Image: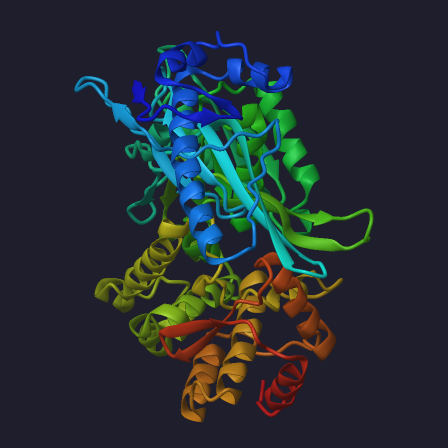
Length: 545
């Protein structure tokens, strides 16, 4: 890379003619500047010196022109000062690039400090590592009044810093596979074994984290599946309740992984409900700083929610506040793949299936009138039949509801996996539900809490004039047909207002509470008041819950 300076210049107080400039670039000119400044100059590369010189000349010319105008029109002097250890830098040079090895210097503005940033790719990693120079300009004016004149002194300070920037885009790609109904553990179906990766011949062991209830129902079938393929399956069985979703559960899995000696690129299986998938995902993220894992959800809620995103985590009990915080410790860590077999739903009781509908209805309210219509008409039958109603299966209704739910979730999460955008419609039902779930002794499941939160937000939308009473009643009727709770004795003003405060903390300074404007459409608001919550609670009490 060649950078050509276009002027002979005065830099750092030393006047250079064209004959001396080359020597100065090489650091061979003795000057009257302080030794610290000369040493700093000599430490710079030739390219940076050339850029500094070119920029200095441009800035000096502009200053002289401005000073001339000032002197001709005013008696007010302007002073340009520079600290001896700082240098003025602004890219003002041409860059020669060869055809075979193009080098692109980038310029940007620092959003925090306002500094001008110049990024130059390094030779060995031009797409990832950049040497940078940051130039920050500041200006201060002081007005001094004397008996004869008013003098304005303007001090301009330009400081530079340097360093390197490393840029790496993490490739995220994982398949969410729909498995033919009831065939996941079928010996002729290789999907489960294939998901555990390709291994050297003779490597005949695998590792699986299994929900305790799932192990009771399907453990023998799972072990037989691998045994018939000549694979020895090591299992780590954990409880899958919300009360068990704690750091110690992650530690237990990590201990078992150490004992098993899981290889760096060897995927392990996580088979269970949402809590087990969250715990196992957290362990996968931590073990050897990240190993692959495969999600196999076994509940309706996990199939449409926990299995399709990249969030993992556990609830955390803080020793300082003596409070437990839901999902306070976690990670964004994608699975290597997901295997979804809807046959697991039939092994759940009706309450658990209804619990799963809490998340599905949430998606319908904020994104899909079509999904809402399906739930409104067929939801009750699906719960009663545990998704095994022959007529609805033949008509494709049950698979359509699951497919729509998963696709909507992926559409919302996919472009925003790391939640850089915090206004998220999929946070509907997740403002007040967190504290509802954490009330000591509360008998409420996640999807149920989400629905209580969701209906409370329906009331907020109505009181704001976003929806009419007919819409409120229609939503309420649908929720009741799905056997979902619409209120909780723990939902009071104190909890509701604290939830808004927690939302401000979690969503970086704003409430960002999703509210529906019609079925299938939503907005995020950040101006909900305590008085508004109180009115909504009073109105909520008028319904026959």
